[in-house]
Image 1 (tube, protein in one colour):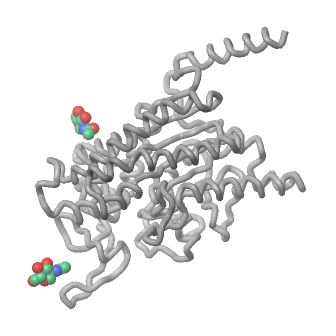
Image 2 (cartoon, helix red, strand yellow; image 1 turned 45 degrees about the horizontal axis):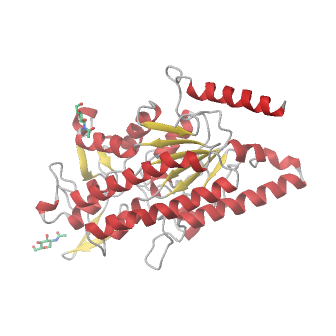
Image 3 (cartoon, helix red, strand yellow; image 1 turned 180 degrees about the vertical axis):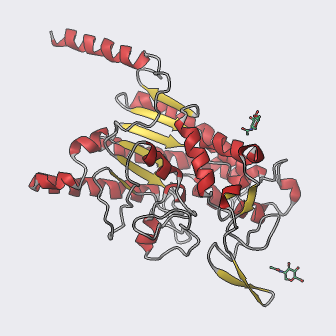
Length: 378
Ligand SMILES: *[C@@H]1O[C@H](CO)[C@@H](O)[C@H](O)[C@H]1NC(C)=O
Ligand SMILES: *[C@@H]1O[C@H](CO)[C@@H](O)[C@H](O)[C@H]1NC(C)=O
Protein backbone atom coordinates (compact mmCIF):
# COMPACT_ATOMS: atom_id res chain seq x y z
CA UNK A 1 0.00 0.00 0.00
CA UNK A 2 2.73 2.40 1.00
CA UNK A 3 4.67 1.39 -2.07
CA UNK A 4 1.72 2.10 -4.33
CA UNK A 5 1.33 5.45 -2.68
CA UNK A 6 4.96 6.23 -3.34
CA UNK A 7 4.67 5.22 -6.98
CA UNK A 8 1.63 7.44 -7.41
CA UNK A 9 3.36 10.31 -5.67
CA UNK A 10 6.39 9.86 -7.89
CA UNK A 11 4.23 9.90 -11.01
CA UNK A 12 2.41 12.97 -9.78
CA UNK A 13 5.66 14.79 -9.06
CA UNK A 14 6.96 13.75 -12.44
CA UNK A 15 3.84 15.12 -14.11
CA UNK A 16 4.10 18.41 -12.25
CA UNK A 17 7.73 18.88 -13.10
CA UNK A 18 7.41 18.02 -16.76
CA UNK A 19 4.51 20.38 -17.38
CA UNK A 20 5.56 23.25 -19.61
CA UNK A 21 6.01 26.50 -17.70
CA UNK A 22 2.97 28.75 -17.74
CA UNK A 23 3.11 31.56 -20.25
CA UNK A 24 4.57 34.61 -18.52
CA UNK A 25 5.51 32.51 -15.53
CA UNK A 26 7.61 34.25 -12.96
CA UNK A 27 11.15 33.00 -12.39
CA UNK A 28 11.42 34.38 -8.88
CA UNK A 29 8.25 33.81 -7.01
CA UNK A 30 6.51 35.49 -4.08
CA UNK A 31 5.70 31.96 -2.96
CA UNK A 32 9.10 31.68 -1.38
CA UNK A 33 8.36 32.78 2.17
CA UNK A 34 11.89 34.04 2.81
CA UNK A 35 15.09 34.83 0.92
CA UNK A 36 18.61 34.17 2.18
CA UNK A 37 21.37 35.72 0.11
CA UNK A 38 25.12 35.06 -0.08
CA UNK A 39 27.67 37.00 -2.10
CA UNK A 40 29.86 40.04 -2.63
CA UNK A 41 29.29 43.72 -3.37
CA UNK A 42 26.98 42.83 -6.24
CA UNK A 43 24.34 42.06 -3.59
CA UNK A 44 25.73 43.60 -0.37
CA UNK A 45 22.92 45.66 1.18
CA UNK A 46 25.11 47.00 3.99
CA UNK A 47 26.90 43.98 5.44
CA UNK A 48 30.52 45.08 4.99
CA UNK A 49 29.88 48.58 6.34
CA UNK A 50 28.05 47.12 9.35
CA UNK A 51 30.63 44.42 9.94
CA UNK A 52 33.67 46.66 9.68
CA UNK A 53 31.96 49.69 11.17
CA UNK A 54 32.20 52.42 8.57
CA UNK A 55 29.91 54.46 6.40
CA UNK A 56 30.18 54.82 2.67
CA UNK A 57 30.65 58.38 1.58
CA UNK A 58 28.05 60.08 -0.56
CA UNK A 59 27.33 60.13 -3.48
CA UNK A 60 27.02 56.39 -2.77
CA UNK A 61 23.34 55.86 -2.08
CA UNK A 62 22.40 59.29 -3.47
CA UNK A 63 19.68 58.26 -5.92
CA UNK A 64 17.42 56.32 -3.68
CA UNK A 65 16.19 57.14 -0.19
CA UNK A 66 16.88 54.05 1.80
CA UNK A 67 15.52 53.36 5.24
CA UNK A 68 17.69 53.34 7.30
CA UNK A 69 19.33 56.32 5.62
CA UNK A 70 22.85 55.00 5.12
CA UNK A 71 22.41 52.47 2.36
CA UNK A 72 25.72 50.63 2.74
CA UNK A 73 25.49 49.78 -0.94
CA UNK A 74 28.38 50.34 -3.34
CA UNK A 75 26.07 52.08 -5.78
CA UNK A 76 24.20 55.32 -6.22
CA UNK A 77 20.95 53.46 -5.59
CA UNK A 78 19.42 50.02 -5.70
CA UNK A 79 21.15 46.75 -6.50
CA UNK A 80 19.87 43.86 -8.59
CA UNK A 81 18.77 42.04 -5.42
CA UNK A 82 16.77 45.11 -4.34
CA UNK A 83 14.87 45.12 -7.62
CA UNK A 84 14.23 41.38 -7.32
CA UNK A 85 12.79 41.90 -3.84
CA UNK A 86 10.61 44.74 -5.12
CA UNK A 87 9.35 42.47 -7.88
CA UNK A 88 8.04 39.95 -5.36
CA UNK A 89 6.70 42.62 -3.04
CA UNK A 90 9.27 42.19 -0.29
CA UNK A 91 11.25 44.62 1.81
CA UNK A 92 14.94 44.95 0.91
CA UNK A 93 17.06 42.27 2.53
CA UNK A 94 18.50 43.27 5.87
CA UNK A 95 22.20 42.51 6.35
CA UNK A 96 22.99 39.88 8.96
CA UNK A 97 25.40 42.16 10.84
CA UNK A 98 23.16 45.24 10.75
CA UNK A 99 22.35 45.70 14.43
CA UNK A 100 20.52 49.02 14.17
CA UNK A 101 17.48 48.71 11.95
CA UNK A 102 13.72 49.15 11.98
CA UNK A 103 13.52 46.06 9.78
CA UNK A 104 13.03 42.47 10.88
CA UNK A 105 14.58 39.26 9.57
CA UNK A 106 11.22 37.53 9.17
CA UNK A 107 11.38 37.48 5.36
CA UNK A 108 15.04 36.61 5.14
CA UNK A 109 18.55 37.78 5.75
CA UNK A 110 21.49 38.93 3.63
CA UNK A 111 24.96 37.55 4.32
CA UNK A 112 26.61 39.06 1.22
CA UNK A 113 29.53 41.38 1.95
CA UNK A 114 31.50 43.53 -0.47
CA UNK A 115 34.93 42.20 -1.34
CA UNK A 116 34.03 38.64 -0.32
CA UNK A 117 35.46 35.63 -2.07
CA UNK A 118 34.43 32.00 -2.33
CA UNK A 119 37.89 31.09 -1.09
CA UNK A 120 38.81 31.67 2.51
CA UNK A 121 39.71 35.28 3.28
CA UNK A 122 43.38 36.06 3.87
CA UNK A 123 45.37 39.03 5.17
CA UNK A 124 44.96 40.83 1.84
CA UNK A 125 41.17 40.37 1.69
CA UNK A 126 38.92 43.40 1.91
CA UNK A 127 36.20 41.29 3.51
CA UNK A 128 36.82 38.70 6.24
CA UNK A 129 33.38 37.25 5.38
CA UNK A 130 34.27 34.67 2.76
CA UNK A 131 31.59 32.28 1.49
CA UNK A 132 32.37 29.65 4.14
CA UNK A 133 32.00 32.25 6.89
CA UNK A 134 28.73 33.46 5.36
CA UNK A 135 27.37 29.92 5.42
CA UNK A 136 28.51 29.52 9.04
CA UNK A 137 26.81 32.80 9.90
CA UNK A 138 23.61 31.46 8.34
CA UNK A 139 23.83 28.22 10.33
CA UNK A 140 24.33 30.15 13.58
CA UNK A 141 21.50 32.50 12.63
CA UNK A 142 19.12 29.63 11.98
CA UNK A 143 20.07 27.81 15.16
CA UNK A 144 19.48 30.87 17.33
CA UNK A 145 16.26 31.84 15.56
CA UNK A 146 14.72 28.40 15.96
CA UNK A 147 15.74 28.29 19.61
CA UNK A 148 14.06 31.61 20.28
CA UNK A 149 10.91 30.58 18.47
CA UNK A 150 10.82 27.34 20.43
CA UNK A 151 10.95 29.35 23.65
CA UNK A 152 8.27 31.78 22.57
CA UNK A 153 6.12 31.63 19.42
CA UNK A 154 5.77 35.42 19.55
CA UNK A 155 9.17 35.63 17.88
CA UNK A 156 7.66 34.31 14.65
CA UNK A 157 6.44 37.83 14.11
CA UNK A 158 10.04 39.00 13.65
CA UNK A 159 11.98 35.92 12.72
CA UNK A 160 11.69 33.22 10.05
CA UNK A 161 9.99 30.04 11.22
CA UNK A 162 11.25 26.57 10.40
CA UNK A 163 8.82 26.48 7.48
CA UNK A 164 10.39 29.69 6.13
CA UNK A 165 13.89 28.24 6.30
CA UNK A 166 12.79 25.05 4.61
CA UNK A 167 10.85 26.71 1.79
CA UNK A 168 12.96 29.82 1.44
CA UNK A 169 15.01 30.78 -1.59
CA UNK A 170 18.80 30.60 -1.23
CA UNK A 171 20.49 33.04 -3.58
CA UNK A 172 24.16 33.29 -4.59
CA UNK A 173 26.21 35.88 -6.43
CA UNK A 174 29.86 35.29 -5.66
CA UNK A 175 33.14 34.47 -7.41
CA UNK A 176 34.01 37.77 -9.07
CA UNK A 177 36.56 38.68 -6.39
CA UNK A 178 38.23 35.28 -6.53
CA UNK A 179 39.00 35.85 -10.20
CA UNK A 180 39.83 39.54 -9.87
CA UNK A 181 42.17 38.85 -6.96
CA UNK A 182 43.91 35.94 -8.67
CA UNK A 183 45.03 38.13 -11.58
CA UNK A 184 47.19 40.26 -9.27
CA UNK A 185 49.74 37.49 -8.86
CA UNK A 186 48.91 34.88 -11.50
CA UNK A 187 48.95 34.66 -15.27
CA UNK A 188 45.89 33.62 -17.25
CA UNK A 189 46.72 29.90 -17.29
CA UNK A 190 47.25 29.89 -13.55
CA UNK A 191 43.97 31.70 -12.96
CA UNK A 192 42.10 29.25 -15.18
CA UNK A 193 43.72 26.34 -13.33
CA UNK A 194 42.42 27.70 -10.04
CA UNK A 195 38.75 27.69 -11.06
CA UNK A 196 37.96 24.03 -10.18
CA UNK A 197 39.34 24.62 -6.66
CA UNK A 198 37.18 27.73 -6.25
CA UNK A 199 34.11 25.84 -7.38
CA UNK A 200 34.85 22.93 -5.04
CA UNK A 201 34.69 25.38 -2.14
CA UNK A 202 31.45 26.80 -3.53
CA UNK A 203 29.97 23.33 -3.73
CA UNK A 204 30.99 22.65 -0.16
CA UNK A 205 28.92 25.66 0.95
CA UNK A 206 25.90 24.40 -1.02
CA UNK A 207 26.33 21.02 0.65
CA UNK A 208 26.33 22.56 4.12
CA UNK A 209 23.21 24.57 3.33
CA UNK A 210 21.49 21.50 1.95
CA UNK A 211 22.34 19.64 5.15
CA UNK A 212 20.57 22.49 6.98
CA UNK A 213 17.44 21.89 4.91
CA UNK A 214 17.88 24.41 2.08
CA UNK A 215 16.17 23.11 -1.07
CA UNK A 216 15.65 26.07 -3.40
CA UNK A 217 18.84 27.46 -4.90
CA UNK A 218 19.20 30.48 -7.16
CA UNK A 219 22.66 30.98 -8.60
CA UNK A 220 23.93 34.02 -10.50
CA UNK A 221 26.96 33.48 -12.68
CA UNK A 222 29.68 36.11 -12.80
CA UNK A 223 29.75 39.19 -15.04
CA UNK A 224 32.28 40.33 -17.67
CA UNK A 225 35.06 41.19 -15.22
CA UNK A 226 37.35 42.51 -17.96
CA UNK A 227 34.94 45.35 -18.75
CA UNK A 228 35.29 47.03 -15.34
CA UNK A 229 37.24 50.30 -15.50
CA UNK A 230 39.34 49.20 -12.54
CA UNK A 231 40.52 46.16 -14.48
CA UNK A 232 40.97 48.13 -17.73
CA UNK A 233 43.04 50.79 -15.95
CA UNK A 234 45.40 48.23 -14.41
CA UNK A 235 45.57 45.48 -17.02
CA UNK A 236 44.64 47.27 -20.22
CA UNK A 237 47.48 49.78 -20.57
CA UNK A 238 48.89 47.52 -23.25
CA UNK A 239 46.17 47.94 -25.87
CA UNK A 240 46.81 44.47 -27.28
CA UNK A 241 45.24 43.15 -24.06
CA UNK A 242 41.92 44.72 -24.97
CA UNK A 243 39.18 43.28 -27.14
CA UNK A 244 37.22 45.24 -29.75
CA UNK A 245 34.90 46.62 -27.03
CA UNK A 246 37.72 47.91 -24.82
CA UNK A 247 37.49 45.09 -22.26
CA UNK A 248 40.47 43.09 -20.98
CA UNK A 249 40.32 39.74 -22.82
CA UNK A 250 42.08 37.61 -20.19
CA UNK A 251 39.71 38.61 -17.41
CA UNK A 252 36.67 37.94 -19.55
CA UNK A 253 38.07 34.61 -20.61
CA UNK A 254 38.46 33.64 -16.94
CA UNK A 255 34.90 34.78 -16.20
CA UNK A 256 33.62 32.69 -19.11
CA UNK A 257 35.44 29.54 -18.00
CA UNK A 258 34.28 30.09 -14.42
CA UNK A 259 30.69 30.32 -15.68
CA UNK A 260 31.08 27.30 -17.91
CA UNK A 261 32.25 25.18 -14.98
CA UNK A 262 29.68 26.71 -12.62
CA UNK A 263 26.94 25.73 -15.02
CA UNK A 264 28.36 22.25 -15.25
CA UNK A 265 28.27 21.98 -11.47
CA UNK A 266 24.73 23.37 -11.43
CA UNK A 267 23.59 20.70 -13.87
CA UNK A 268 25.10 17.94 -11.76
CA UNK A 269 23.72 19.11 -8.42
CA UNK A 270 20.24 17.57 -8.82
CA UNK A 271 21.80 14.09 -8.92
CA UNK A 272 23.34 14.68 -5.52
CA UNK A 273 20.37 16.56 -4.11
CA UNK A 274 17.32 14.97 -5.74
CA UNK A 275 14.73 16.98 -3.84
CA UNK A 276 16.24 20.37 -4.62
CA UNK A 277 15.21 22.94 -7.20
CA UNK A 278 17.88 25.06 -8.79
CA UNK A 279 17.96 28.08 -11.05
CA UNK A 280 21.05 29.35 -12.84
CA UNK A 281 20.94 32.93 -14.08
CA UNK A 282 23.24 34.04 -16.89
CA UNK A 283 24.24 37.47 -15.58
CA UNK A 284 27.27 37.48 -17.91
CA UNK A 285 25.09 37.57 -21.02
CA UNK A 286 22.84 40.31 -19.69
CA UNK A 287 25.74 42.53 -18.63
CA UNK A 288 27.68 41.88 -21.86
CA UNK A 289 24.66 42.82 -23.91
CA UNK A 290 24.27 45.99 -21.85
CA UNK A 291 27.94 46.97 -22.23
CA UNK A 292 28.32 46.15 -25.90
CA UNK A 293 24.96 47.49 -27.02
CA UNK A 294 24.73 50.27 -24.44
CA UNK A 295 23.78 52.99 -26.88
CA UNK A 296 20.77 51.09 -28.15
CA UNK A 297 19.58 50.82 -24.53
CA UNK A 298 19.90 54.56 -23.89
CA UNK A 299 23.29 54.58 -22.15
CA UNK A 300 26.07 56.91 -23.33
CA UNK A 301 28.95 55.21 -21.53
CA UNK A 302 29.73 51.56 -20.90
CA UNK A 303 33.17 51.43 -19.30
CA UNK A 304 33.83 55.06 -18.35
CA UNK A 305 32.69 55.58 -14.76
CA UNK A 306 30.14 58.00 -13.39
CA UNK A 307 31.62 58.56 -9.95
CA UNK A 308 35.32 59.00 -10.56
CA UNK A 309 38.03 61.40 -11.56
CA UNK A 310 40.48 61.99 -14.39
CA UNK A 311 38.09 62.36 -17.29
CA UNK A 312 37.82 60.21 -20.44
CA UNK A 313 38.43 57.58 -21.50
CA UNK A 314 37.89 55.90 -18.09
CA UNK A 315 37.36 58.72 -15.56
CA UNK A 316 38.87 56.30 -13.07
CA UNK A 317 41.72 56.68 -10.59
CA UNK A 318 42.68 53.64 -8.55
CA UNK A 319 43.83 55.85 -5.67
CA UNK A 320 40.67 57.91 -5.33
CA UNK A 321 37.46 56.00 -4.73
CA UNK A 322 33.97 57.39 -5.30
CA UNK A 323 33.22 60.12 -2.77
CA UNK A 324 36.79 60.66 -1.65
CA UNK A 325 39.55 63.13 -2.42
CA UNK A 326 43.17 62.68 -3.35
CA UNK A 327 46.18 64.58 -4.60
CA UNK A 328 47.57 64.58 -8.12
CA UNK A 329 50.53 66.75 -9.10
CA UNK A 330 49.95 68.86 -6.03
CA UNK A 331 46.32 69.65 -6.69
CA UNK A 332 43.34 68.17 -4.90
CA UNK A 333 41.14 65.91 -6.98
CA UNK A 334 37.67 64.67 -6.03
CA UNK A 335 35.88 61.56 -7.25
CA UNK A 336 32.38 62.88 -7.58
CA UNK A 337 29.27 61.76 -9.40
CA UNK A 338 28.46 62.59 -13.00
CA UNK A 339 25.43 64.77 -13.61
CA UNK A 340 23.24 61.99 -15.05
CA UNK A 341 24.04 58.52 -13.72
CA UNK A 342 21.27 56.98 -15.84
CA UNK A 343 23.55 57.44 -18.87
CA UNK A 344 26.33 55.34 -17.32
CA UNK A 345 26.63 51.58 -16.88
CA UNK A 346 29.50 51.86 -14.41
CA UNK A 347 29.02 53.62 -11.11
CA UNK A 348 32.56 53.67 -9.69
CA UNK A 349 34.66 51.45 -11.94
CA UNK A 350 33.87 48.24 -10.04
CA UNK A 351 30.14 48.46 -9.42
CA UNK A 352 27.19 49.16 -11.69
CA UNK A 353 24.84 52.15 -11.52
CA UNK A 354 21.28 51.77 -10.34
CA UNK A 355 20.16 52.27 -13.94
CA UNK A 356 22.36 49.36 -15.05
CA UNK A 357 21.16 47.19 -12.14
CA UNK A 358 17.58 47.89 -13.13
CA UNK A 359 18.40 46.82 -16.69
CA UNK A 360 19.89 43.56 -15.40
CA UNK A 361 17.02 42.89 -12.98
CA UNK A 362 14.44 43.47 -15.71
CA UNK A 363 16.19 40.95 -17.92
CA UNK A 364 16.42 38.40 -15.10
CA UNK A 365 12.69 38.79 -14.51
CA UNK A 366 11.87 37.85 -18.11
CA UNK A 367 13.10 34.35 -17.27
CA UNK A 368 14.89 34.19 -20.62
CA UNK A 369 18.33 34.10 -19.02
CA UNK A 370 17.48 31.42 -16.49
CA UNK A 371 17.91 27.71 -16.60
CA UNK A 372 16.17 25.47 -14.12
CA UNK A 373 17.31 22.09 -12.96
CA UNK A 374 15.70 19.50 -10.77
CA UNK A 375 15.98 15.76 -10.51
CA UNK A 376 12.74 15.28 -12.42
CA UNK A 377 13.43 17.74 -15.16
CA UNK A 378 17.21 17.87 -15.53
C1 LIG B 1 24.02 43.24 -29.24
O1 LIG B 1 22.86 43.44 -30.01
C2 LIG B 1 22.78 42.63 -31.18
C3 LIG B 1 21.59 43.08 -31.96
O2 LIG B 1 20.41 43.04 -31.19
C4 LIG B 1 22.71 41.18 -30.77
O3 LIG B 1 22.66 40.34 -31.90
C5 LIG B 1 23.93 40.84 -29.92
O4 LIG B 1 23.84 39.51 -29.45
C6 LIG B 1 24.07 41.79 -28.75
N1 LIG B 1 25.32 41.53 -28.07
C7 LIG B 1 25.36 40.88 -26.92
C8 LIG B 1 26.70 40.68 -26.31
O5 LIG B 1 24.38 40.44 -26.35
C1 LIG C 1 50.73 64.75 -13.51
O1 LIG C 1 51.57 65.44 -14.36
C2 LIG C 1 52.21 64.61 -15.33
C3 LIG C 1 53.22 65.44 -16.09
O2 LIG C 1 52.64 66.65 -16.50
C4 LIG C 1 51.16 63.99 -16.23
O3 LIG C 1 51.75 63.14 -17.20
C5 LIG C 1 50.17 63.20 -15.40
O4 LIG C 1 49.11 62.69 -16.22
C6 LIG C 1 49.60 64.07 -14.29
N1 LIG C 1 48.77 63.25 -13.43
C7 LIG C 1 47.48 63.47 -13.18
C8 LIG C 1 46.79 62.50 -12.31
O5 LIG C 1 46.92 64.45 -13.65
